[in-house]
Amino acid sequence: MNEERIRNIDYLIINDKYRAINEAGLGMSAEVIKCRDKIKHFSPETQYKLAVISKSLFWKSFKYEVSFDKQPSQEIRSMWFTINNGNHVGSGLRTSTSSKPDDGIIDITYVKKFCHLITPAILMKVKKGKIDELKYTVKCTCKEVDIKGNDMTLEYDGNIIKSLNSI
View (spheres, rainbow, N blue to C red):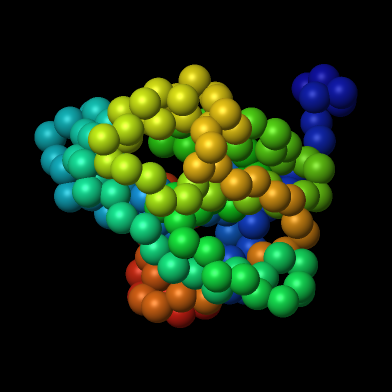
């Protein structure tokens, strides 16, 4: 194997128990995975796309207390909150345009509440890798993030952890 292609990559550690290479998400991303797991008789990619369509009709915002790098926590209301190490999720949705799996940095992207009528336009922007162009998008970087909420569901690399109060 070509030595120039071998490199160490970061991974996300979730509650000292779970590991994620690509991303972890709250809100919409977790809701989509829960829905996807209930859809049968289709290819995995079709299951994911159907779940995105189904859940996008009923997006809702979630409230979290978030602390970045041990700073004082802040209340965040978002519809979609992703902790990124990579930049693609699901069937190619680009939730981060700047994440690199070997830079030692966590890229956070969250989407604030918006009107459901513009959901298709938002999904098209995300699919095209233009999430940064949305006025609802907030991005930051950190080494560590602590999140508190009530009965949160976390999706990490396509897996689900339910009933969390802190991450």
